Image (tube, rainbow, N blue to C red; front, top):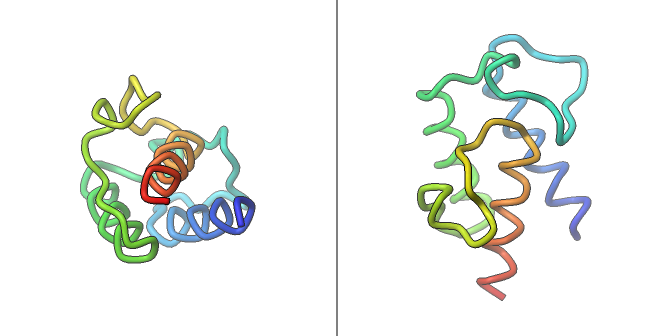
Length: 86
């Protein structure tokens, strides 16, 4: 499941990227992929709908201390929220 969650998140991120990289992984910097703050809001809505979760500010998620800078940050947040949801 975990790998599928990551794949689904990367797919959503890529669908909103202006500068579409050939591939996306945890180290992909969102701003370098052309994902700005407006796109990030749309991504959050898509992730909430896909995984039936509510994504708060990153600093409100256990273990997160920064904003979403990389694809890995987004994956970590979603997986944390899914674990909390049970």
